[in-house]
Length: 140
Image 1 (tube, helix red, strand yellow):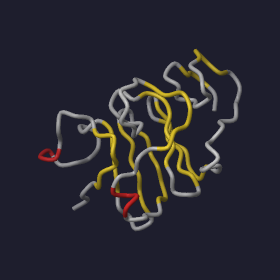
Image 2: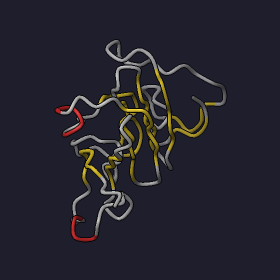
Image 3: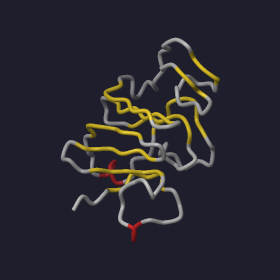
Image 4: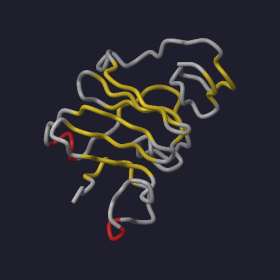
């Protein structure tokens, strides 16, 4: 990764103003290979070959999938997959928005987390709290 890093969105283990040249991101040993990467406004998500999701960067809207109260993380950390974990789903795509993250599994089910105004959930399902756990988005 390279570019601006004031929120840790480069995943290099430090906050920096800019990183001018491509630098390798060290992934945890349990998830050593990236299958897909997506960058939001100030956070990044990585889909690994083990269907794990790693995130780093801004957490203002819980779009990094972490429960903690920190405003940002600067190194890749695995998120809690909630219902996805219990159903042993194979993830195929991760996409970051400005204040949310979305996951698509191999069966075409869509999951999202972060700012409820951006996650595609129905108005009745929205709460004042930002949700860090991936939730199924009804597509019908």
